[in-house]
Image 1 (cartoon, helix red, strand yellow):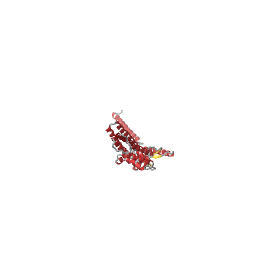
Image 2 (image 1 turned 60 degrees about the horizontal axis):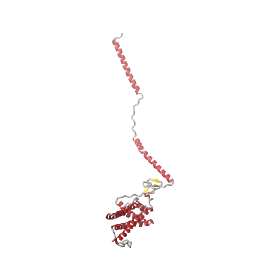
Image 3 (image 1 turned 180 degrees about the vertical axis):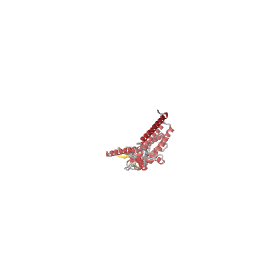
Image 4 (image 1 turned 90 degrees about the vertical axis):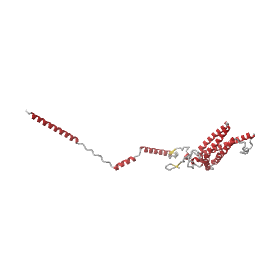
Length: 307
C-alpha cells in the first residue's frame, strides 16, 4: 500500500499538470483570436488643392430658385415671341418689363392717353368759369341800378352809369368777374387757337405756370368775397349764392386739375421729361413741396426704357 506521503505527491503532480494544461489552452485561444485581425491604419490627410477644388464646385452650383426663375423668364420670352408672331403689339412698361398685348388706354408714360378732347375740356370749362361771373354781375348790377334810381338802366355798357348804385354784392361780383376773365378768359381765348394748332406751346406754358399757380388763390378769394356778403346781409339767398358758387368752383377745379396736365402734354407733344398725373401748382415743385413723376419712353435697348 502507498503511504500518505506518496499519495500527497501524486495529487500535487496532477494539480500541476492540470494548471499547465489550462495555461496552454488560454494561450492557444488568444493566438487563434489574433489570426485574421488587422490593425487600423490612420486615414491619409486630404490634399489641400483637392479640398479647394471641391469647395469651389459647391459654390459654383446654381441654387434651385435661380434656375427656376430663369426657366420662368425663358417661358415669358417664349410667350412674348409667340404673341409677336400672332401680330400682337409688344412694349416695355415703365419698369422694364416686356409685355405683349393691348397697350393700356390710360398709359400716360407713352402719351397714348393725351388727346385733343383734353384741350376741349379745358377750353370749355374755362369759358364757363369766365362767363358765369360776368353774367351774374350783369344782372345784379342792373337790378341795383333800378333799385337805386327807380328806373331801368338804359345803357348796358360796363361802367357807363358810374358806380353810385353799387352794393356790397355788386362790388364782390365785379371783382370776381374781373379776376375770372383775366385767368380763365385768357385761357379760353388761347385754347380756341390751340384747337386749331396755333399757339400750342404758349397755351401749354400758360396752363403749367399761370393756371396752376393762380386758380387756387382766385377760388379762395372769390369764395371769401361772397361769404362776406352773406355774413353782412344775413340773407339765406346770399348764403345760397355763396354755396352754389363754391360747389361750381369745386367741380371746375376738379376737372381742370385732373385733365390739365394731359391737355398740357398733348399741346407740347409730350416733349417733357415729366409725366405728372395732376395739375399741381408749379411753384410747389420749386420749393420742394411736390415731386414730378418721371416720363418713360419705350426703347429697343437692353433695359427697355430710357429717360
